[in-house]
Length: 563
Image (cartoon, rainbow, N blue to C red; front, side, top):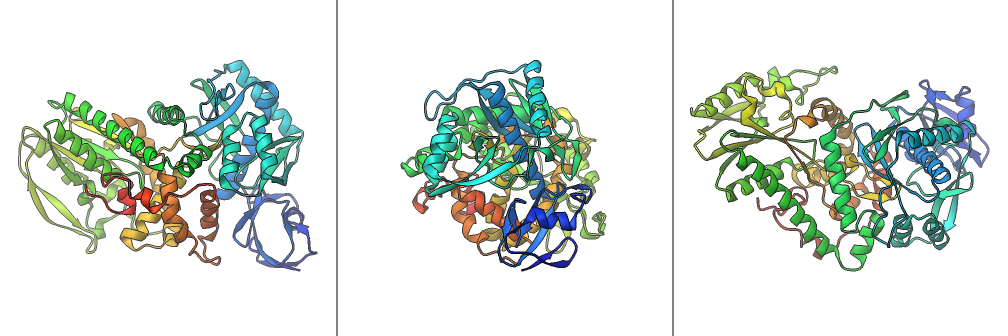
């Protein structure tokens, strides 16, 4: 049977039923790829564990930690080791892997759930207990225990998860409606993880546990470097925003996808939409209240956030709330201050770097803001993106009740307006910081959430295919890591644009777009991963989507916005 491997551009004649692990041993005798352990493989662009048996000809690419899917495989496996360690040390506690922090995954120990939807109370852990968990994880890793995958009858799996005090996991399995479910076993302990695991615990030597709030942060290797731990960044404001949203999800009884699916299947989707939108409106009003309380000092509001975070809608809705309070907001985009195309800096590949701070005319921006603050009239430029140059815009003066609202990726970077009195500026950070989980120990990536938003919007508004959006995403993320995330804590207010109903809504729009991507496309692996994730979610119906108000952030992505 012929197997072609991308790593060495060779064909191998192997016996039917050969595992990927056996083939990897032939190609990588030391078990290393690019100096890192072989963790998994892409088989015809689909992610598979190394225990996968090949029965027909395939194209295979082995991957390590420097591949995004290799990194996810490592982290999933590490979470299972953590789960086992906690179960052995604290049998009466339930491990909750709640949400992603800048440095890892925030975890808590809770007492068993009181009812089907009300989570148990947090059981605070101290430094000594965290040390015990770390030691037990190292013991499990040193034993090099195998991860074993089995197909189980769904009802049998549900009973196991209920006995493990994992009602969200049990509810999710039931809501999917599948006859079987893939279940992983580690030394007799069963759990589910929504993607492959590494072959055994011995692969997971690099990790750390750091006490954080009432729980702890599970830290794993840095992106692309399996030997070094991601440094701990205690970004208090972002952590507080994530915690607030997580607690809110728990309060309304919709913390996991299983609970969300159940709410939709029982006809409660519109109630969730109304509740989530009311919460957003209240958050916008609170930000406007803070601006109004300092209106004698604050004349400029900057709004920043990563791609598809809803910055434009947030600018307009904050402006509306300011109007309610008697202020007169004037909204403009910082993109109008781009330098002409030929003056745009280039990246290491020689291509225009539109996300660099130097792509903006900082001198003009600073001069005009200072003129506006001093009562002068200025001509705000208008950037023509097709021609790549600034054109004549419009005149503006800031009156007594006027407030300038500007949004852009560099809005939290103090270097952007270092010549402007910072006491006159109020900064808002907006991002889709979802704290909704798949189940008790599988969180949802905020990056995936934003990618789905962008796929839907790019296709509808810009005529960009899902394939193109996926292929550009790495570059987008690189720009965010450089220009946005380092400045998150500079914000005076944080707005979480995540909505509890948005994944069921995005599934309705994104799923058919992703299914169009050809198996031969470089974007197929990522599309397949996203589709597998969406398989766990019950989609909203057209009638339920129609209930989303025209001022919702979601309308920025699916259309029908009236802001």
